[in-house]
Image 1: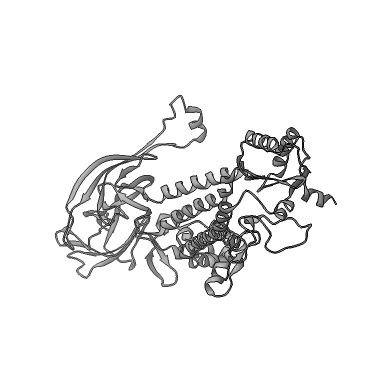
Image 2 (image 1 turned 60 degrees about the horizontal axis):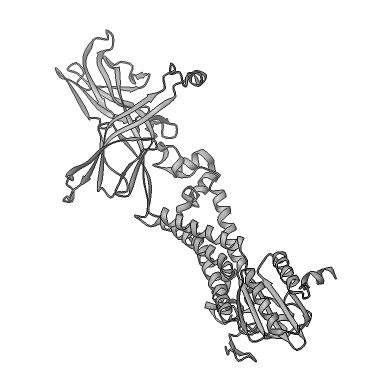
Length: 541
């Protein structure tokens, strides 16, 4: 579309309301109506073009209402995400099948919660898309308003059109002084005294200060965009990691999220409690009446894997020994291992093979609960076969068969078949905690529980966050923008000696009472008429 040429000779983009140079209103309106100084009356793309699909998309995202609604929807989604716990907070034993956990605990709402992705809200594709749309809205709105504002402020002239001055909110006309030059010099002095930057062209003056505050909202927007970018980068592989891992004493295991580059060996777990006799805490400890943990500590060895052939075990080279404690993580290569939990599990169960009637021991064997054998040879032709193992036993009422909830040995149960020279066909026994069942009721032999070994398993969280500096920088920039726009304001004063009068007008983007008080002090020292707040007079009328 063609540009609009003002009487002053300046070419204004199509849609401009006020000439960017002299301030003359492009479209004459009611003489009593004040100028709309929003964005200096410049042409905004969203209010000028609406011809094709690109224009419509641009206009959609430049709307403040659209941006607000996107933020509201995101806030509502964040609130809904707190109704049920996020997946990272559900019991570790249920983490292998979160869908079943949410359905079991919360019914249909829990199932819907999982299906819609609220269980991992902040990494779900639609939540990240919402953040991206907010970023697009902020960017488009900033460009749509910021570039015309910059162009208008850069192009403004000292001498302004009469209608520009008369239609400012703060305006006054006073009698022209006899000594014009001395008066202009005193005006310059008084304005500089108030820390205005002053420009003079002939019989016109433009005084300005605090222009940088106009960019406060745009600095906010830059900070928000960087902040949102940091949050969105958390779904990019390698940028953010937050994984839980469990490792037994004596076990060597690849560290989650390191692509099997690093391994960890758990040497020993230390669990200490406070002594009730300790004077400093004795009163508090006696009131609690139960052990209070003093220290959780995992003594570990960090290894780095060398190059390996497919299917072969990697060669591990020791990196360092470390004692991981709460708030004292193991840091390496951008990763951090935090001590977050522990548990004590059964590692092995011991059994005796006995005669049913006399309880005479024929032999004994032990079952490794992590890697149980299929057969145990007791000598003299006696042996036991493991025909069923249920680490976390429960009886399935639908199938009418024993089953297991998890692979963790919380409640182990076994089906053994016992063979002896006297019973070559074998006898079946079902063994569980406090249960020793003979399905046939005619077994000559039985298996009796003879003890259990336990071991500590430490719970660690593997963290890696390259997005935190980006989020931190975005937050700092945002706060700088808040301070910039909140504690300063853009003030301008125009003065023009015209015929037998002196015209004086002023504008600010906020705090009208502040600029009015400042100008009242200047006019009093110049001994000229006070400036009137024309909007205030209209409101009173």
